[in-house]
Amino acid sequence: MARDLNQCQFIGRLGRDPEVKYLPSGVAVANFSIAVGDSWKDKTTGEKQEKTEWIRLVAFDKLADIVGKYLKKGSKVYVSGKFQTRTYDKDGQKHFATEVVLSNMQMLDKK
Image 1 (cartoon, rainbow, N blue to C red):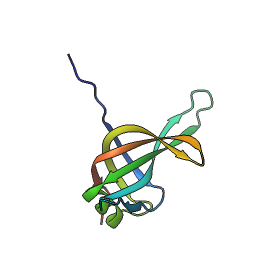
Image 2 (image 1 turned 45 degrees about the horizontal axis):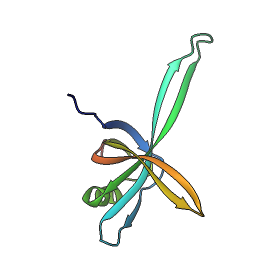
Image 3 (image 1 turned 45 degrees about the vertical axis):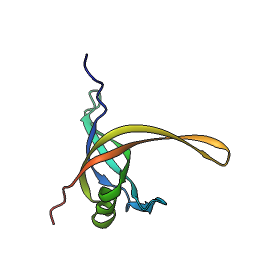
Image 4 (image 1 turned 90 degrees about the vertical axis):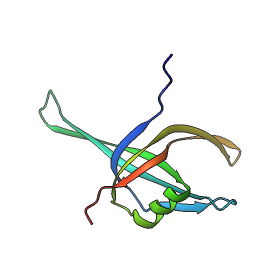
């Protein structure tokens, strides 16, 4: 029987600087988002169409430290990790957050 696969891969640009916090245990946690785009030619009008999706990402431990140190708004990156949905309470309301928990990140800017 085949196992299920939970693996996401994206290439995109950061919309803002990563936010790095530390858990009480001292483990770093970095939160940031990247924009990924798609473009196509409209079949009826012939005009170029574009759409941008924002992908929420979270990195832990050493990867979070690297993200916080080297990535800035506009940085181009390749990321891969597991798709995850979590719940949290805010002001008595239950909220859901969908994000990709990173296992790999590669900087793509030429510097």
